[in-house]
Image (cartoon, rainbow, N blue to C red; front, side, top):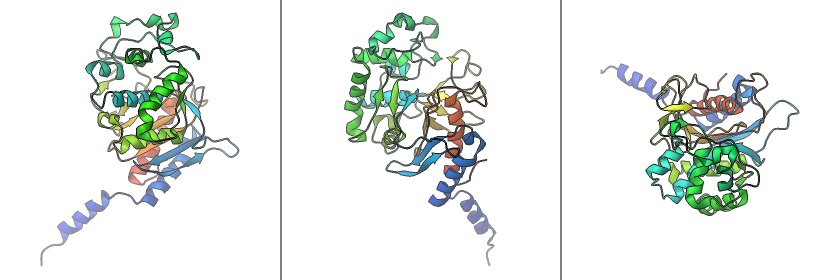
Length: 329
């Protein structure tokens, strides 16, 4: 009689790599959102995980009595706006951005003398203001990663959007993205700042992510492409400034991060915002997630911890729990 040992080993290995059940995923993600130390630190928030068609799990969590955001709560999303503008550009370019587009979208264009836009300025008026260095290119940063809103601000001017204010800029994006995402999609700007002026809800951002995961949007094929090094301690000749804590080295692609740090990364795509809004797509492009909150000041437990980084630390635990069905502490 032939030995059963190879069959037993095969069954054990197969079980180890089997996908968790939907119930296991939901339970693990929910417990992580509610109880994991990094998630308790950023409560209250709304979280959601879904696929290219529908949300699969989610909810609001936070201390008793806290007013937690809901799926339809409007909020400023700061740098999570970058992924939205990148999706718009990819759609306008029919999925074939030029070399010039890439230099702007992965922040190597040299337009780095930028701080902020006023609430009523147009795209071009903001970029050319004295506060933003009159829109001049900085030769010292050309060809190097430097995290700045000036790249997308100048790119929008070159795209012919310079005379648009916040409402006009939002309308331009709607005219391009809504036919793909669907009617009723909401996305606005509080400032005509493509890289950081967006305002939306977790549910509406989730619709954008669903269209990426399903492959309906052109940016789907660009996720993770032509990524560049962003950590100046790792690649000082290639990178100047990053908002990611320097003990991690993420890459940057077409208006979004690639979380590929050798020690802590899982290869997910994301676009964390300064106020704590953290959207992501798993490395295998099967699932999306959102952690939605708006915090205008640093984490009270760690004044050096940026709200965007704090949300990412929680959000990636929820993602890990979802992917393998095991809750994280």
